[in-house]
Length: 77
Image (cartoon, rainbow, N blue to C red; front, side, top):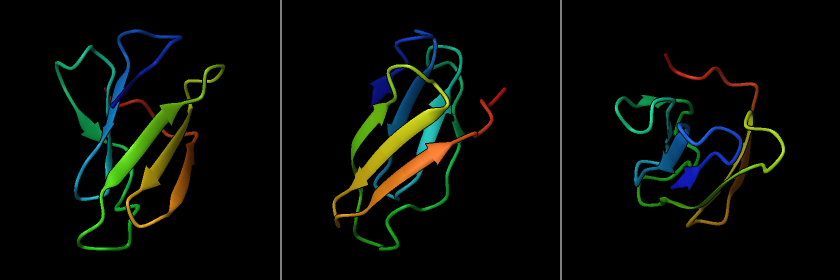
């Protein structure tokens, strides 16, 4: 889980299913912003970070060694 330093209402988390979810409203609502990033039925999102200077850039690491870079995604409404 990560909190956006530029927008404290923005919260992100990765799931055991390999997806990343975002909440624009401090956790009241959630929406997926990625597909399965693991390419595996047993791997999980194990590391997650929001770029400190750009809320539109997210990094996700998986338990099976994959690193994903998410950018220009739309904040769920």
